Image (cartoon, rainbow, N blue to C red; front, side, top):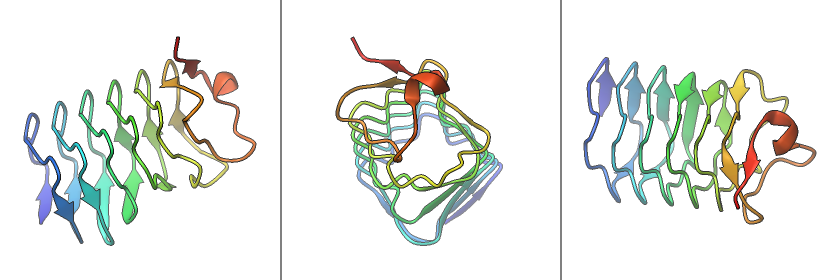
Length: 136
């Protein structure tokens, strides 16, 4: 589907599979996307995913540009790679696989994002220097 300037906050997308989906200028705050798969052609542009449950999401085919993940739960998310701009401030990144994100990461905010020993970052990336914090 194509969603443009839609208010989808609080929607339950748990376990859904998306292909060629386009979310442009959408409010997806507090959505439940737990275990969703974003396949080829999926695009997030100028979206808000604040506080969304993205636990175990597979971003294999997703292009992410200018997306706000502030306070989102990305534990166990995988295949996060095609990111142009993003805000991961206070997001939970424990166990997330971000190792394929292209460097240099331009306009990506990591302030107070939480990570642990199972979080995978790109080679050479220093999460502490970027402002992220190790889980305690």
